[in-house]
Amino acid sequence: MLLALSATAIVILVLLWEVLVPHVDEYLDRRRARRARVTNGLDYDPGRERRAEQRARALLKSCVNAEEWAMYRDLGFVRVWGKAGGDGVEYAYLIYPHKPIVAYLPQTGVLLNEYCVEFPDQTRPYGSARLPDSDDVLAKWMALTGDERRLIATANMHLIGRQVDPKQVRRDLWRLAQWERQRLREERREGVA
Amino acid sequence: MKFLRMKPGHGEVLIAEGDPEVETDERELVEAFRRQLDEGLWAAVPIENRTGRRQAHMVKSFDEVPRDAERVIFFPRAAGGAL
Image 1 (cartoon, rainbow over the protein chains, first blue to last red):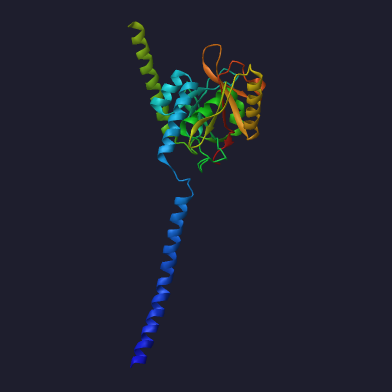
Image 2: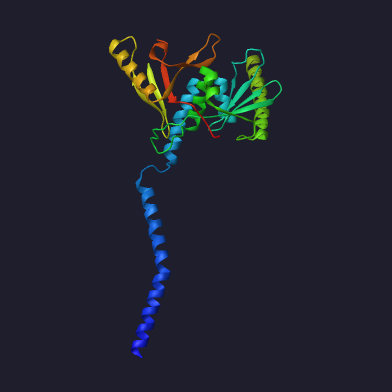
């Protein structure tokens, strides 16, 4: 009797062991992964990113025109006029942080292309190659106003709609027009006063 | 003249500062400039054009930097984005 009970107990233990081992392994793996993330020191730190963005905004403000800065502050993008066209057709770009540059015709509102370009810092000082938003805008602004042809030649060109939503861009152009009208009205009012 | 470098997770970092009219300072600035370009960065000088509009002047060597420039900004070289 005792022998039969012992044999049954051993069988139960072996079966339990077989069932539990995968779960124990999984738990240990997860625990190891959690610890590894904590110790690499490159975790996303929202405070650090916010401070970086504040510095980047101050630098952007000190470099671009007052109107461009106000545009970025109020609307979240910057318009830069194109210079490469020699036939007199006016065109412009919209610069968004970490999104493709959008080329369009201001007189008709026709969207031309999107130019996908990045400024990856491969030294990855904090684990990421991505510049703060305002630094990305400033890098695009400097490259466009300083050497438009080189930047456009470097970028991957696509028709509108690949990465940016055409509806959103059209809405942004409408917002820009409203914003400019409002600014003009305020300037006139200040001039009269 | 200040050399600033954009850095992820930090914003700009001051990497060199000096007066290009002083010989030792100029040597250090030239050296720092070369180091940044060797690391594959682009360099730009914020300037005002004749009409008073601000724009950037891209420079590939220290000689191209206007002597009266207050800042040279180094930033990672552009690369074509998502295909």
